[in-house]
Length: 299
Image (cartoon, rainbow, N blue to C red; front, side, top):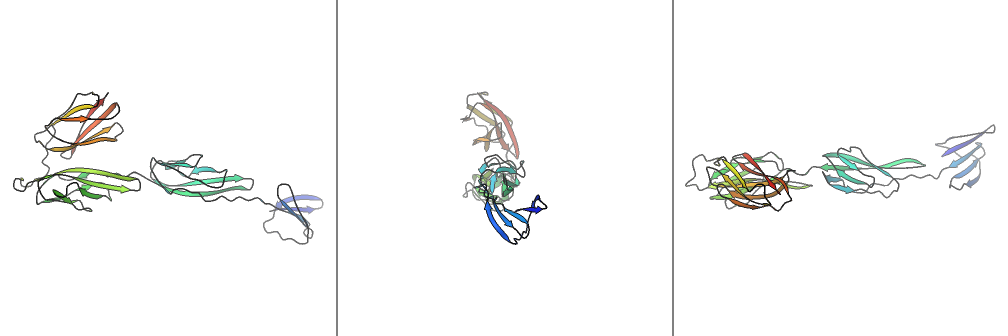
């Protein structure tokens, strides 16, 4: 509230933070809504400003995944949005926030008028998509024996695709072979941004024919053939190996995104139909703990 002082016919204006009225003589209002009071004993004219600045709370989500966007809003009009850490999340003039990297960021909404500036803040936590990592451990056991698998990612859950062949402890990755056959062990990591799954193909061999001390029995791939290459999306794969067995093939694009996964047998030609745009793709087979990758071109 500004204070007007009358001193020897010189008018000065200065702020009054705790003014008291002594001998109020009259009240008037100007066209802007400001109120004036004649304070006779203090020899002043008091001006009471009606200026109000009240920025309301920001509305919107407090969690965001990397690469996703969310909209914030504020019922106070005319404000400007800003981010305390644009490398974690950026915000545009409409209040749309986009997550860029993991971390916590403060989004501010600032309103400025003749009364000054005011702001409201909103905290958002940006979370990365889950990554299930890579399962490590032997890929062949005998029926009636077990092994423990491991994964580089924390907080996941273990599952078996066929509990009649082998079971796996949900928390520890401890596997028990029951009967001869093939099962896939999964390790699933989940957070607020979704789920990711790592896979490990496991052979359980009959106890009567299982070699002593069996472990990783898979042999190396001696030849990885793709024909024709280039092609129109249809081709044949043949992986030559000293041992005929099943393994998982994963096909990814140049961005590393998986477009297809299939189980094939070594030493057997497998026809593949890839319904994908023209471009370069990579076919990866994991053998004996090592990955073998070949390129295929779709025209």
